[in-house]
Length: 306
Image 1 (cartoon, rainbow, N blue to C red):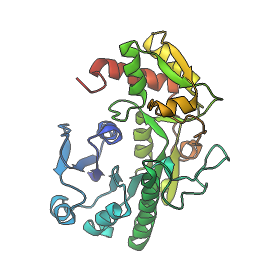
Image 2 (tube, rainbow, N blue to C red):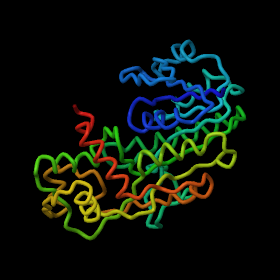
Image 3 (cartoon, one colour):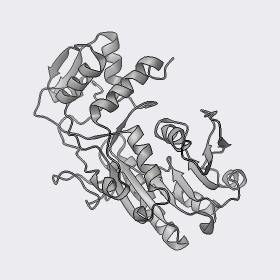
């Protein structure tokens, strides 16, 4: 029996991954998080611990040989440092870090591939430190794993959608539709963006585990379809069966009124996720299919609010 340690794993992407990974035979699964949202899944050992407490981690994490460590919630370099300090290098067979496509600097060369320039410092905006700190976490992972001779893989998803999503992305539109309210969209030229379903992220991680072809590499996770706000509305109409009403406003007015549209208003955010499909051998779920599954979950659970 192989041992797998999942850091995070009770929210959104980590939770879906645990659900899917638990179907893979031959692994004893341990999930370490703060315990705020217990999984209660058969065959999964839950470790309640705050990763920011080094002493608590040392006491809580079993002294096992970890064939794979999947890290969903490292947001700073020192988050990685603590893990590599607590778990001996010889006890980690593969470290998989879920980063973000936000680590790339702005570019007009699209789609953005893994070799594109990364951010060199904090970015503009209310969450400007997020991307840079994720980048620094990636660099710490590479440094620490190089010193400990630990195989590593970095995954950089674009906009993730799907069940358990706590970010107001697709649910923002689902909520408006349920309330019968207009969907307000920008009236400018198209902004294009790419998505990846939470189920595809889970499958990609599973495909990376124990796969030597993924060692010492970073991969984007991004579906091939280019989505615009008008295309998103078309998909929403198809998956909900509701002919939602759309109102167009200028970007300036949308910003001034604080309308929380969750995707870019003017710039393209288009990434290539083709590299991992070649290495791991899987194909992305069509956007329409993934959104239909997401809306079915939302309708059944009230988006997790009930």
